[in-house]
Structures are given as structure tokens and as C-alpha cells.
Image (cartoon, rainbow over all chains, first blue to last red; front, side, top):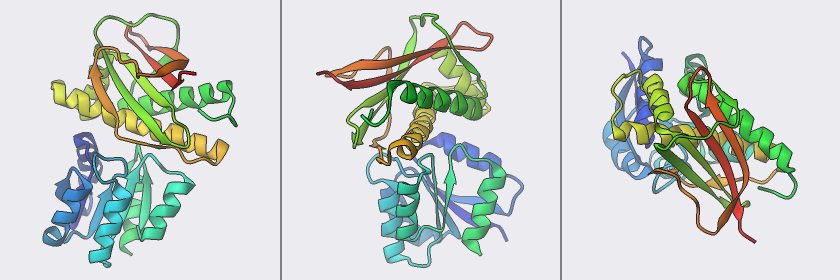
Length: 120
Length: 153
């Protein structure tokens, strides 16, 4: 059975890139949210195996959205997918309970490795 | 951008980030040059809102951004919405790389908001260009300028 991913990113380009990279793998995109607020609203209905979360978005940023989801759903597995891959941001992501960090622009090998670690 | 960083050091960070992200995201190689931009331009702009108080702008020939968007979406037909989406995401990634390199150099975290896209050239109010890097696409007449703005004295 495929692992269901909720993609949270305000760019359709990232959704297209993720669809490309996940084609033929054990993962499928189950839901797509264009904002942190939308992700918080949808999480309980979708119940994905994994969430990919952008950081810089219109409205609530991805770190705040991840924190809010984890507060209501501590079992959620969230991987941050962002170009802000440096200590300050990675440390904050870890502190709120994110399971991994993928640097943009991403490639398949890196993405699948972090997904597998997050779901282990 | 920061007093702990020389202008030359910042130029190097900007140049490396732009060349790397452009090639990896859109499969286009840009080389520094002094070729003037055309008349049909688009601009993406971000403001660093904490720690720096500066901004970055990419002004590019629309044809170049369209070509980059086509490569990224793997589609020949690129709508105006796609062009804006691509430009904002591309610049978001580029600025993330710049912020990361700046953090490693200065230990100051540079936070920035979502990119703003406009048609034509955009000059941020109350700011002056400190660094202007001009690029031409390899094998093409189209180009782009990456501009670092600082507050006017």
C-alpha cells in the first residue's frame, strides 16, 4: 500500500517536482495545501503518513504550521522542505519535532532517504 | 548586507547562489557579462526583515524566465500564472541559499518574506543599489540582473 504524503507549499512548481520525483516509488501525494493554515485545517481529515512542509509561505510560515499540527497530532511525521537549510532553521525545526529536513532544490535520492528515516 | 562581510564577499555569495540555483532548478547556465537587458522585463523581489534590513531583486528578460519555467514545469505552454509561480519559487530558493551562506559567514540569521513578482523593472522605495551583477544566458541574448539594495543614507 502506498505511503500517503500531504504536500504543503505555496508553489505549484514544487508539487510538480515532487510528483516527478515520487513517480514509481512507494509514495503518493494524497493532498496538496498551499498554506500553513490550509494544512492545519486539512490534516485531521487526510491523516497522511508524512507531511512535507515549506517554510517561507504567504501567511503563517511552515515552522509555525508544523508546530500547530504537532500540538494537535503529536504522531504527525513532518519533514521540512526548504532552501533555508542552515543551523538556525534546522535547529528550530528539530526543536518543534520535525522528523527531517530536505534542502531545495531537492533530488530523489536525498528526498527518499529523509522520508524513510522520518517513517522509521 | 552586514558590516562583518565585505562587499566582495557578498558578491561572491550572490554569484555562486545564482549560478548554482539557476542551473539546478531550470537547467540554464548564466555567465556574468555587461550586456544590457531588453525592454520586456519581469522582477522578483524579497526583503530581509530581520538582522539585515536590505533587499534582493532579480530583474530578467521575460523570455529568459519563460524558458526557465518551461524547463522546470516540463511544459512548452507556460501561462502568466506559471511564470509568476516559477519566478517566485526560483527566487525563494536562491534567497534561501544566500541566507544560508550569510549565516555561515556572519552567524546572523537573515529571515525574509515571500517574494513579490512584478512585470517591468522594480526599484524598492528608500533603497539604493549596492551591488548589481549582470548575467547573460549561455548561447542566448537574454539576460538578468541580481541587485542587492541597502537603505539610502
